[in-house]
View (cartoon, rainbow, N blue to C red):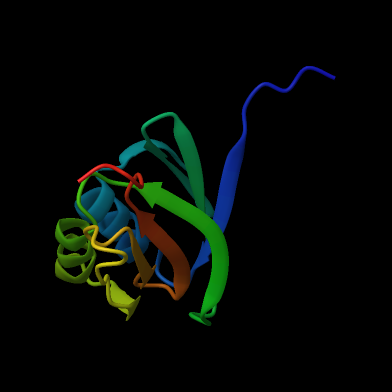
Length: 117
């Protein structure tokens, strides 16, 4: 089998609101839109945002590595998301993890490469 593309699909009660969140918070680019699925790109990753979500909180397994978790967490909140776990310093290093939730209840992580300030 030759895989042509890999994408991760999340659910959204309001696809437009979800797309706006990912564009504002993570700089996503809209790649394709249909009546039920909008695909956005973040770097080389494709995230499919599927309509019909119920807004329930769901762990996605998505993790976005950023240079500064504190700044990233502020941008998540500014875009309408929430923090489930505030970023905190650990072992004398700047914060490396923030647990977040998007506007549709999809949980994800912001991380920073460990060992780099």
